[in-house]
Image (tube, rainbow, N blue to C red; front, side, top):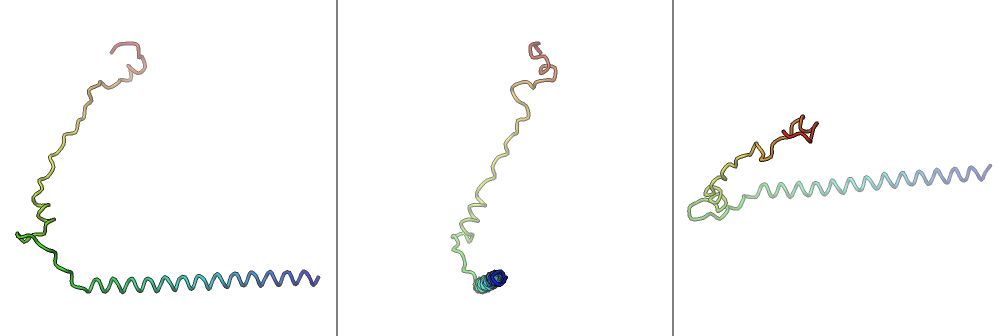
Length: 101
């Protein structure tokens, strides 16, 4: 009977140690992610507070991309074909494929 109790106690200690390591590992992982998020927030705050550098403009005063967008004409609208060259099959032609329609 004493051997059984020793096995039960050892198993309980092993389970408790596994739970403790899991909880401590998750806490460390969460703490690490929080620190990383704080660093990223700080970097974003620094970037947001920096004055944005002005883009180089062309001689006309507009940026090159704005000039390109303004000078490009819109594409012509395409016509959509609603009819096909082959006639549509009717229910009668499907039911009697030998008869000419």
